[in-house]
Length: 202
Image (cartoon, rainbow, N blue to C red; front, top):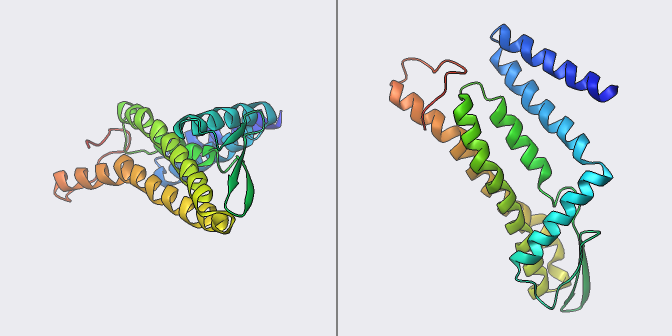
């Protein structure tokens, strides 16, 4: 019942804001609500376990199934020898890239300056892009730890991996939102803004 109440409340707020032309509140509430509710849904054992299994298989396949990496797909854990000992690397919710995927989906779905066709287009290429970048991030972290050893664990995971994923996802956001907005304003000569819901050409 609590889930339905949250969904109905969010839907009602978005419809109210849209009806009265409060586009900033519509965008913020819709995008944030999608991310929060989506995170609560996927953070359940059956769903999160299935996503962890899929990402683990993807990472292992991207690395070419190396013999030095011992996967335990049911728990999303990798065991590998490194200079100085062994490392156990487990995929948690952050490593799955689901949070970034939910944020991107919410932003696209509730961005008022995009038409339905443009939203579907951005979801069609943006979702695979975020998924692929997350796999690349995880592969990068595992490879760095394998070659550099235990001392590189914090640097690889906390610094380099997150920096790579952050800037890469910012590139996706640029192509999905900023570039099309700048192009539209440049085409209009700065005289007027596109009407929400009418779309903007990239």
